[in-house]
Image 1 (cartoon, rainbow, N blue to C red):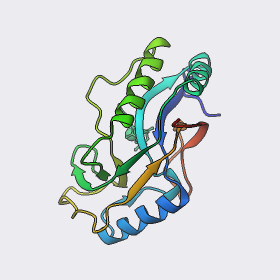
Image 2: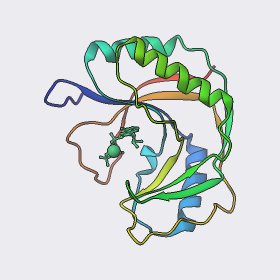
Image 3: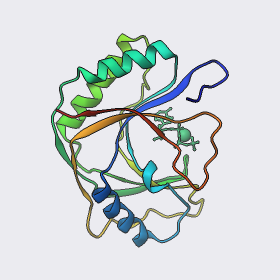
Image 4: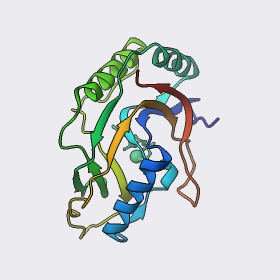
Length: 181
Ligand code: ATP
Ligand code: MG
């Protein structure tokens, strides 16, 4: 386990692609060529809710609360691509956000608030980052020729360990895994 100096762990709920879906995403990324620092294949994810630093009791409550959520499987078509100059990221996103995804995010936000955790106030913009440190001359990448279609069946709680630099290996650690059903 990795804690920051205040004994907190940096956590976020996310969707993680299956091995098959990951392969499609990597193919899509190859079409874009080298446009920055590629996210490690095993770190590819779509954030549902960023929680930031959490104490151990919060972490336990999140694990228990997530297990009691009732969602439903849904499909995501990642048919939009873009570049954010602020975070220097290249990403894929769905043009249409499925209601089941919005409901899952809403429920996770409620769960976090019940635990007294702060949730990001800004509106939710689901996206899956393929490259970091791209730009600054980076132009918006072309639409993926074959937009990856993603059947989402589960969600995870991930830890982004403090003080771990980007290296050759994956960074995030999975703390929990639940069916979206
Ligand atoms: P780094 O910040 O070291 O470049 P990272 O962004 O992958 O790497 P984290 O900052 O721990 O790692 O973020 C984990 C996930 O949460 C990422 O998808 C990130 O975009 C998202 N995230 C981070 N901070 C916020 C925030 N304030 N609001 C919403 N999402 C966030
Ligand atoms: Mg970050």
